Length: 144
Image: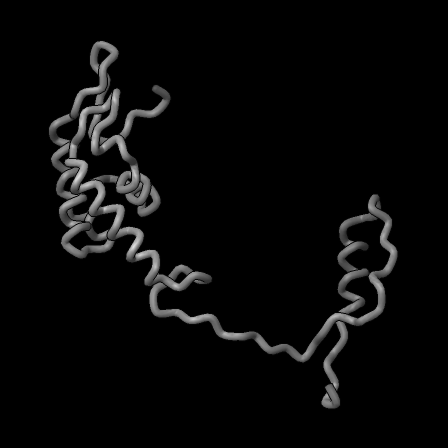
């Protein structure tokens, strides 16, 4: 195994539960299911992971057990955590990913010229290619 999940250790070629870490994993799942954020649940449980690491831990099915790893949490607890994650994801804004933020249309005073795109040599300098695109940006007039 290239990576051993938090809460486990390898002894004699077998994955076994590391008791002190496994207790923190169980507490993390319990705190999360009680309504805490991932970050707060991890901090209170004492799991030394970043928010990204906590999200990975929460979604890793080995914690419910598989052919190699014994379960630290029950399948029911794991499944409840996944349902809660999905429900919380639905409540987050699809663009920003942050709760309570709504997309706002952006209005500008510029548009792209209708002219066909200028010929730009593929081997040309990237700065020259960008300049060719920027030349097509024109201001919007009051008549438009």
